[in-house]
Image 1 (tube, rainbow, N blue to C red):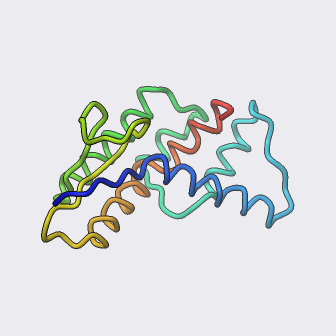
Image 2: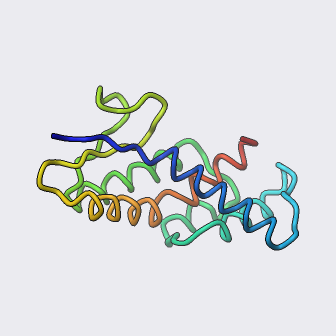
Amino acid sequence: MRTRVTLGILALAALAVGLVASIRAEGSHAAPRNDRAAVLEMVSRAGPGGSAFQDAILADGAVSAAELQSAYDATFACMTDAGVDVIRPGDPRMAEGARLGFAVGAGQDRAAVESTVRSCQERYLDRVQLAAALLAGK
């Protein structure tokens, strides 16, 4: 039996909570929406991971729709290469409103699959997704 777990939205929420906790712990305040440098600094402190891939996207202080999609595509490729059954938007198994999902098949170790998914998200998606949301004022 396969079960579906969607982490795209959960990862963004977890990073946002970490970001707020980090800001509060340091006694600083959120930057104005138009302060791209401050947003990118907050994103860099928001959590583990990141990579040259994400750094390249964030280097100009903006995240375009194409760059965000590229981050999702790289995450999907990482997951697929690791043997994870990726559920993409448009797949009837995808939870409503989610952009990233995966299935754990019979005989697969759920914890190992979830660890792989988390690793791919940290490497290719998390900081880009968080920056896109913050820069959009969400």
